[in-house]
Image 1 (cartoon, rainbow, N blue to C red):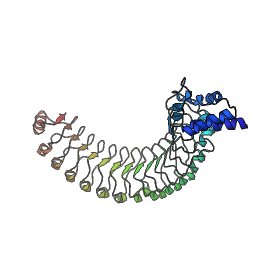
Image 2 (image 1 turned 90 degrees about the vertical axis):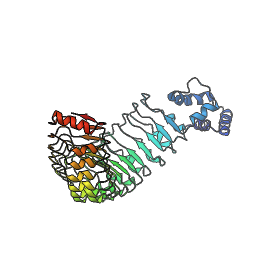
Image 3 (image 1 turned 180 degrees about the vertical axis):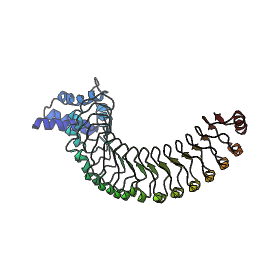
Image 4 (image 1 turned 60 degrees about the vertical axis):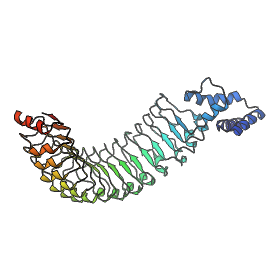
Length: 420
């Protein structure tokens, strides 16, 4: 860079600072060195026009203060490139260029040493600037819906990252370098083409949320169990045939999503996950639930529809905090009387089974608001149903219930919408 260009850049930085004294100094230097301020403004106007708010405005202090802002949102502007002049926004902390048509980022972005949030989803990026690792203050990086296909090697050096979003970028391989990101608290690899996860993921001891759903995984490393801080784990729509062993030692888990796999059984050791609140198992090949499921005393939602369950363990009645129980599209012909102990249940889904009767104990579910018994073989319901005074909807479509029985049900539940 020539001496004149270097001085011009220094003048521009002073003018962009937004500080009155810095602006005065910049103008003074320009005058002393006979730098054409109009020429400086021309460079700055590239950014101003790009931002879309400063065109035809005068070069004054108000505009300069805005130019030195810490947050810029250029989302949804059909941009195909970011001008190199972005480097003059030295105070920038948040840059959002989502929903554009970017194929590359300028190397100058690596000079934004104060950048904390870099939001880049829904572009066409295939690589990142080589010196991105200079952004040591960056905490949030969003790369969702781009075209990388390979792990950008620069990511492994961003050791201060706390949140990394790599959804839907056609990623086929996760390197051992993922283990370097020891400050990560949120990691999403949703909807890629991963077939394995390296054991180094167990180094991410601060991780609270992990989404590796919609991939091609058949197993997970046992060291996944080292993620002692993890509370949310998304594994849905993979190819798991067995419950991943490492899960049983992640004792802080509150949410597990395993729907859309090929599981046939759950281990008894699921009972160790005492903090679990949401368990999603729908669309697997489960033939039974373990007795240990009754030890999940904090469970509030259990989704296990579209499986091959024929019976429920009696221990299900121990789930006193359960509010939502989804068991539709299974093969139940009967239900355990213990289901009547689920006193906090508000939603019970039992459609598309083979039930010929339901236990009278369901009448104990005083908080029940929605009950779906459609597509079964029920010809009547027990009179204890009259106790379900909070029930607002009862679905009985496609059951052989006679007209007299229908009238009886409606008389028992005058405030409930009964759907035949």
